[in-house]
Image 1 (spheres, rainbow, N blue to C red):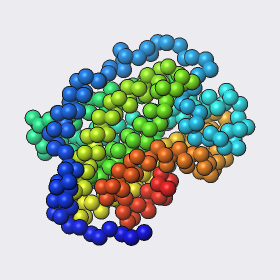
Image 2 (image 1 turned 45 degrees about the vertical axis):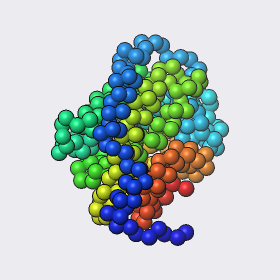
Image 3 (image 1 turned 60 degrees about the vertical axis):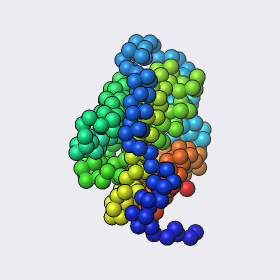
Length: 314
């Protein structure tokens, strides 16, 4: 494969602007603010939290459960499969809360030096409010489903503490998209699925509608940043996003879920790693994101190797 020649930051910016690929920051923010005013939800009142859990319905589509179609899955009873789905839904909700708390801190850092009256800052504050509601919604879903919370490992928890402190602006938005787009793809399969619990479908519907705005905001800002950032910052963004992809792929399902449903953890983890179906699910879920990152120049060098090692890039 031939490598594209290096182009200076100034030349790249001129080329991008000439092609009209950079949307006006204020124009994008105004549109997102209008959408937020029309399509925002309060999960506490929008969803029926007092409705009983529905017998015979899944907490997560079976095809998206980590062990689906493995030898171990084929030995499991339907009841055990559904219990694993319930625990994995709690694990994903726990991961979602962790990511959203990180994202809120990154957004606050992003707007700290910007005009507080700009639409760009007002939308960032609107998104932070969305993420507060989402985090509370996910926590309530975990409690309602009756599974425990599943925090990430202490190592990854503290690694993220460092990452969110030193992250560059483009690195922050690349990590934001990583945390949003794969889960968004899964949730788009979940909310119309009538096999799934009504409450879970309601949670995923709200999240999909509101996250679409967050993805647009992050994509436009990351595209802008990758054009205008100095070369060292672009390269650091490639590496940090690749490392974030590696952490994300490891943390996506907490291995404790297997122990909690009566499975051998080591055997389950090994079968997930060897599963062609699981690999296809994760790479398909990440494809829209990895194509976009490739388009804007993030998928290069060491960063691309890290993405491949994460299993999210074919």
